[in-house]
Image (tube, rainbow, N blue to C red; front, side, top):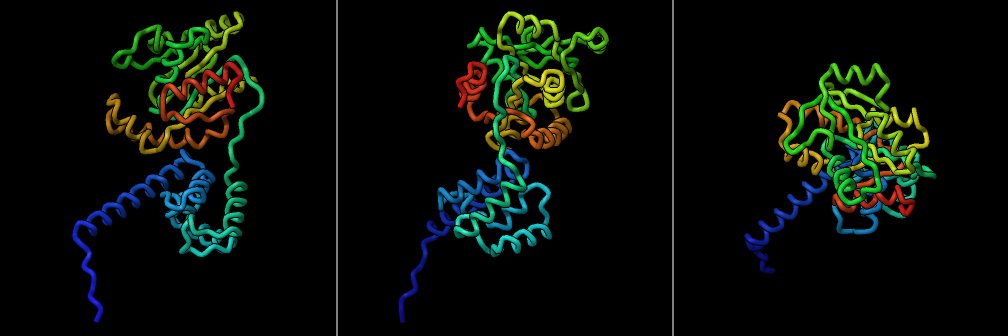
Amino acid sequence: MAERRVVPEVDRAAASRRALERRRARAALKRDLTTRVLAPQDVLRQAVEDADSDAATMRITDFLMALPAIGAGKRDRILDELRISPVKRLGGLGVRQLSALSEWLDERFPVHTPRPGRSRLLVLAGPTAVGKGTVASHIRERHPDIHLSVSATTRAPRPGEVDGVHYYFVDDAEFDRLIDQDQLLEYAVVHNRHRYGTPRGPVDDALADGKTVLLEIDLQGARQVRAAEPSATLVFLLPPSWDELVNRLVGRGTEDAEERTRRLRTARAELAAQNEFDYLIVNADVATAAREVVDLSSGSAR
């Protein structure tokens, strides 16, 4: 009788840890798909290019269920239509199956393509806690040739914020006066609480002087600017992952649990609107993201 090999406890423990890490990584990937931080085409590409990636080990059923508006019934119909077995993993799909799935994804979730042409009016927006203000500040400090518009807001200053530098902090009466006198290029209520707006005068003056102007605003404001100035270049800042976005929001410690929940709910809606923008930039590193925004102003972006 052959001697049975005894697997050492340390090997079993290591294998268990690796399996747990894989499950957690796939769960994070699914969150990124659901919140649209990652495009499904990107995940499928990872699976094809790296057979050992977390994407490659994801089951096709989990992949489809992570996509927006796909339930169990629709998932099964899609698999039947594409002739893909529900036990398949993304990394194990055949050539025909990959082609059919890619075609279906491109039709159902069109890939974002930059709009041709650029303007000296740049609009930077994105979900809460993605780091819009940090990227804008980085640009302000290193590129004085770019005029960074200062928004007016009715919210209180956060620690370290300076009136007239980061925002113009005003009360509701003053904000109403700015609206009544048509002194705001755009304005909106953000997170159902505070109002934000862009004073029109400094923007018009800077553009008249031939400068590039950068507006760091929210999704509602970006839509208003696009309606008022269709040639404006709209840039959407993405987080590297949904989990990182949550960590940044929690880490800054400026909101209580209820407010964080409200902001994350808003962030999901904002991420779903990213294809309204001309360019998408991932803020994994502030300096890199800032450089990509600046490149758009100089016409050297790829």
